[in-house]
Length: 114
Image (cartoon, rainbow, N blue to C red; front, side, top):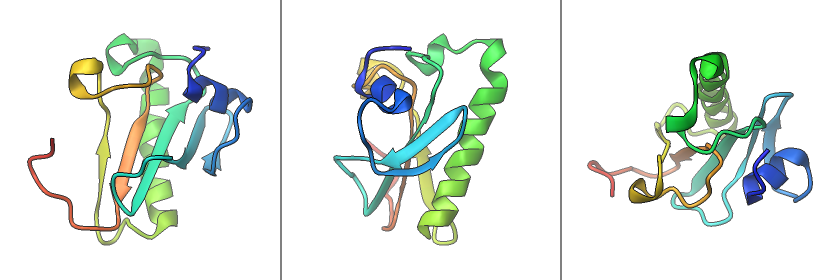
């Protein structure tokens, strides 16, 4: 597993405000929220970016999306609407190189983003 802050959270070495966890996935509140609700969903498996995921990761990638929907529902933002975002590499704003999915909601979100 990568030695990033998210890898350490996934291994339980760093505390986070967890909202979900199972054997494959961890979800927690972002420390620098960009919306009233800003959750991060990460795989326990070390995958640096979406570009580095392989065919063998298809089930895990699907599970990340299902967990995103579940935590959005639990957070009370599913009905009003939420956005999921995966930034891939530095040019797209990825700063932690452990695949992660942002779940943002709790306010009207504008389009286009960025």
